[in-house]
Length: 275
Image: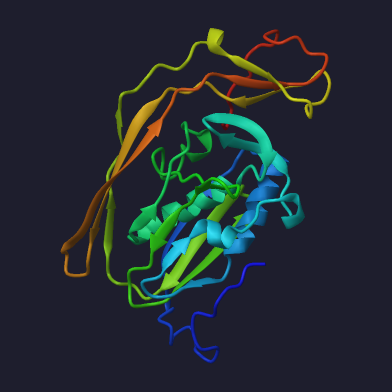
């Protein structure tokens, strides 16, 4: 059981804490996601509604996320481990961490920990674009987190909104504006590698896939080193941060999961619509 220590006197109002206005918001989309992935996104996002971060406090995604198990309401889906897509509990949680990361990015908060996915995912092509994702993982032995610091003298309130209809997740940050200006430069792609050819396709037998069924879980994507530069200016126009975030993505082939009664490599490539 996770114990959350109260951040302020229970009699304090939002205004007393400096929570007076919306300072930033950000949306990502999950069009084309499976029902299991959508369920996990909604379940995971619920852990981050109404969180209050104290002035100069470090926020840890995994601390508030807690356990990702069936007992905690999550279901089996596709997760990325070691640069490969496999079946596991909680597939979709990284959509939550990515949306939250982008919101903190555009608020100008400094990051103390962030790691990109192993390869570029179509879910994050729209909106902020590639180089703006954040993967998380915590199995007790391996802890990959996303952390940032509320480096202001005001409390920060985090809320989020899940829309099944729009297939979108939105995070909103409320506090007192510091008058900062955030500049995100266009991403720079370097060391771009070719998209793997179809003769590199990988077929994995998965016993949970129905007989006679083939599911494409990855679409062939080039590799690249993607750099995103962020400039943060204070209310006086003074540059207070100039940081470049570098994401190293490997190329991946088409990957298929198949069940019993299927002959591998016998199916045509599925068009990557909305992926």
